[in-house]
Length: 275
Image 1 (spheres, helix red, strand yellow):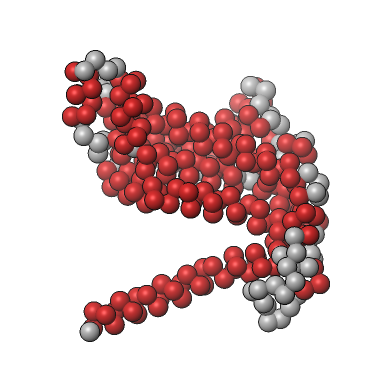
Image 2 (cartoon, rainbow, N blue to C red):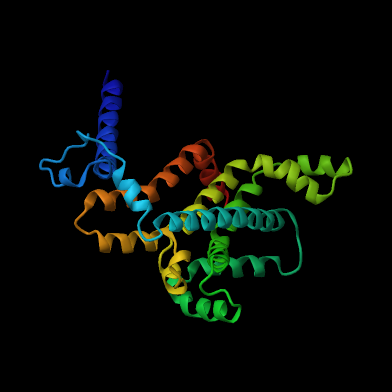
């Protein structure tokens, strides 16, 4: 009986915490569907009486906001694919092969995790300028990918080291090379960790603001965080429009977590414990 009472108390605490965490999100979504005349209601209503999509239509047709959304989506997806592919190859090499300077290279890469991001803006800007990557979306992808590789490689290496070596040895005896082993054996087994890396990389590129604001000058090339900041400054009193614009940045991340949910926790746990 005491065990059941403890479980009920834990369940109540978790439910209260969930409600407290989701209340701002629910209110933002509710306000986004309200006409502007109904947004200053007090006490606030979480279910709009007259829901409308006008705020979303106005937001997407305002100052290239829709273009900024697709710019961010393209940059985030490309960064996620590039980081996941490269870090998987790097992590597999560090986990399975022995070569001269292995530890030096590995810990040199990990040292980048200790450097604050703001300290790298000036050298990154100079390098991007010399490479002709300023004011370009490929330049964003390159910088975002480089910045995300250290942590994700560390995470994936820990996961690859947990996989049994007997599968590789059997494949080598059957005549498979290491690339075939990586693609056909390691990648399917490492799907939880690869999904975790894909999510982290996508979120990092999707939410980044400082570097994009620094290097992008053309209105057509700006990403969603910049567009939302400008939109909030122009429509500060129109909360329906502001929340509709902000909700467009939240929905893709929610869908991403739902899609990768069953792999996400497994990848984090296995990689972090072993790494």
